[in-house]
Image: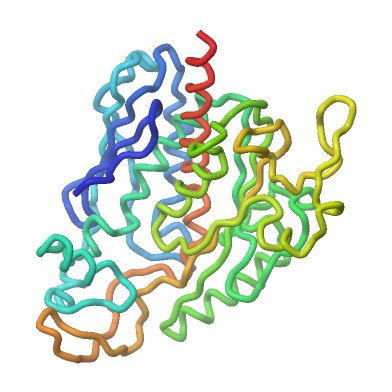
Length: 354
């Protein structure tokens, strides 16, 4: 299986399956001498872990990270940083009923046809459990980036939307509610809606918005490696993501050029920011902002028509512990992938100036 690595200079390679002994990764290219706050890494893991509230999967995993190499006396050594996260609460029997059956809208069918074999226990390598490794690497990338601030929050659950501009939101509210949205009243509505969807044995999708502040001018390359293009690749690599919208996005298509152009101030800043902080594929010093769309979780507790591996039509129903809505736990994943993109370009900029 190819495609298990992300990044060019600051590179993450992940391994492991949902119901295997452990998942883990190797971070290559992290400079030597960076002081690592291990508590901060673990805090990021706590934001992503299952079982953290009543509106997410009740699988109980502490997700404690064990570093094997690359960190000595609290600092990076410049060598590959190896780490593992043990799987401690697997219930593989919950998936025995799909051993020879393909779940609708999962990777079961495509994996089996591509590789001729699949790990049906929780989806194996296709499980979102793999994203825990991204959060570890993203936590280290955040520490490398210093003053660059990455904040993601839930801006929609189903048809419930938080329509305020991010400048009017209170980011301090995000970690105060289980939905991880930046508005207390909207959070209550979203939480109630997710609970109702769960009672129905169904799932619902949502949108995560991300804002990145204090980005230096000059990150990104102007042709194939545009900064926003790499953000798009990073976000679309996350499980269940179906869309990526940058800057003014689709709404910008309804404006005239005279309305959409970001006019300059004398200091090089712009009066508006429809560009989303990137022009010509290169950061311009303004806030970077984008949205990521997540589909409803494919495993539902309702009967659905499917086929088995011999092509026979049959009926199946989901079992086990699953998120009724994935976006609350995906917030730190979006931040982590954004940090990996920025760390890569930040290091590339440093190398280009040597």
